[in-house]
Length: 122
Image (cartoon, rainbow, N blue to C red; front, side, top):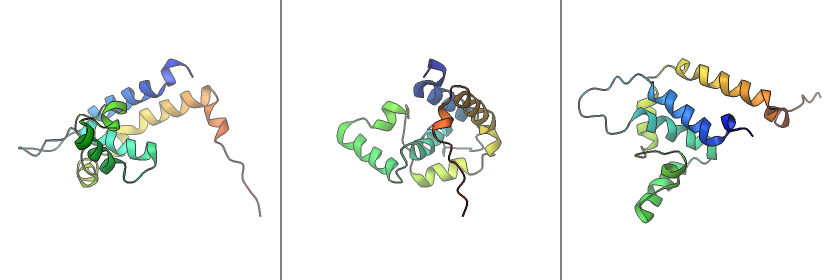
């Protein structure tokens, strides 16, 4: 896979998208960055493990650093509820361009051919 489609590159691009999300918080309720909430949400889908964030918080307490910090470069790991509270107000259109660019890039190099399923007729 070329560098522009590498996981590290895609994660950096996605983080840049999350950093552009509008933040309507005010006052002192801004402990977690929206980019961390977005990357936390993405990491759950990436690993397909609903307890991923709780496990990462546990690893951080035990070992001082979690896989989420290493792979997804989260600075702080928000809880599932905090992620929902931060991301629910953000219009999904902010992810549209990133989604389309990633889809087109994966399609161009043939990655999607291996995951396309044929329709089964009964």
